[in-house]
View 1 (cartoon, helix red, strand yellow):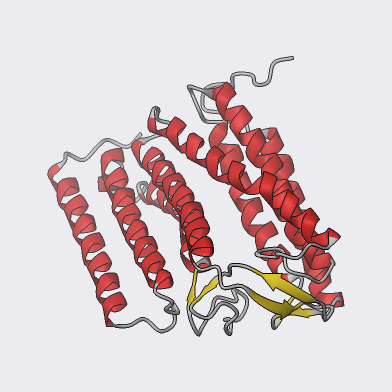
View 2 (tube, rainbow, N blue to C red):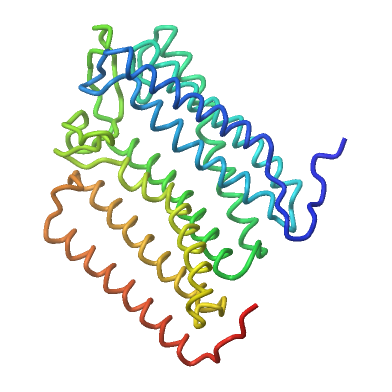
Length: 323
C-alpha cells in the first residue's frame, strides 16, 4: 500500500499520523481542563494539571501546522512522511509523560527520583525528546531545498521552523547549563530530587499567572515559547498580507509580501535571541535591565529598517494586475 498519493494541483494532503497526534494532544488538553476543575492538588504553587494543558494545546497546534506543511512538499514527500510520523510518535511519548506525571501528582521534568513513576517518565522522555528536535531540523532542511508556495509562505515556513529548532536547542542548553540539584515536595508531600530547572538563578521562583514564567529569575520557557510559536505568527502574517492584497494593489507582488514576512522574521529572531540571552543571565522577562532594554531597542530599530526597506522597494516596482 502506498504511503502517500499525489494530491491534485492546488490541494494539500494532510499528514494523517500528525492529525492523529493533534487529536491526542487536544484530548490531553481537554482532560487537563477537567483536572483543573476537579483536582486541587498543587505542585510548587501550580495546579498539577496546568502543565499538561499547556503542553497538549501547544503541541496540538504545532502538529496541525506540520500536518498541513508536509502535505505541501513537492520533493522528499516520502522522507517528510516518515519524519512527520516519527514526530507524531515522539510527541505522544513526550506529552504522555507530562500527563502521566501530573496524574501522579509529581514532577515530569528534571525528576531524578528512582521510584516507578519517575523511571517511567524518564524512559518516555529519553525516547521522545531528541526525535522532536531532529525531525524538526530535517523538515527545515527539506524546506530549504524547495518552495512550497509563494515566496512569502516559503519564507515564513523556513524562518518559523528554523526558530522552532533553535528554541529546542536553547531549552536543552539552558536546562542543562545550571544543574541546581535540590529536593522539593511534590503534590503528595513526597520528597523529589530535582536536577535542572526551568528557572535560572532562582530555579523554583515565583511564577506569572498561567504561563508560570519566573518573576524572580531567568526562565528558559520564555525564549522556548517564542521560538516554538513563531511559525504560527509568521503564517498568520502571510495570510493577513494575502487578504490585504485585494485592497492594496502594491501587496499583490509576492516579492513585497515576502520582504515584509522577512522583516517580521528578523524581528522574531532578534527577540528570541535577546530573550535567550536575558534568561541565561538569570533575569526575569518582567524586569529587564538597561542592557536588555538596549538590545530590544536595537531589534526594534533593525526590524523597522527592514520594513522601511521593503516598502521602498515596493514603491519602485510596477503595480501588478489583479489575478
